[in-house]
Length: 192
Image (tube, rainbow, N blue to C red; front, side, top):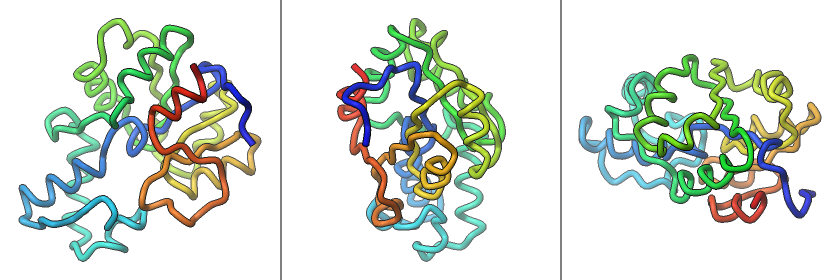
């Protein structure tokens, strides 16, 4: 169970699939550059995209590598409401993003292109390079709660004393029994 309110400084966030709409970018680039059109977010029922879509693993890897290396150039968009809610939370505390991405620079570049300059100093980014090592980094940042879209990560966090909250996506449905948020409006209600 979650408390009625979570102090913003105790809550951390995953980047892709929570703050940034990586699925939209993947679907758009698959269509524009590989003529693989007609994919809907609901079709992505597994975090490992090649296990649920009929797309060659090389294409999946190429698209995601490009998004990881240059999120700005690929047109990565924020999830609806993310910029506004993070801005409001940043007025109260530092916002911590712990991402499985191997390098932080593309995330910093993207944040600078999307968020107001006044919000940026309050956002910390930890790029740790692996999905299965997040708990160590989350503990190191002093966080007690963490929002992630990868169900397996949330299940693992739950065993390490961190309260996970699953950001609802088609690829995490029916894969856990943890608290869920469906939107940034729900995150706002939890924290502000």
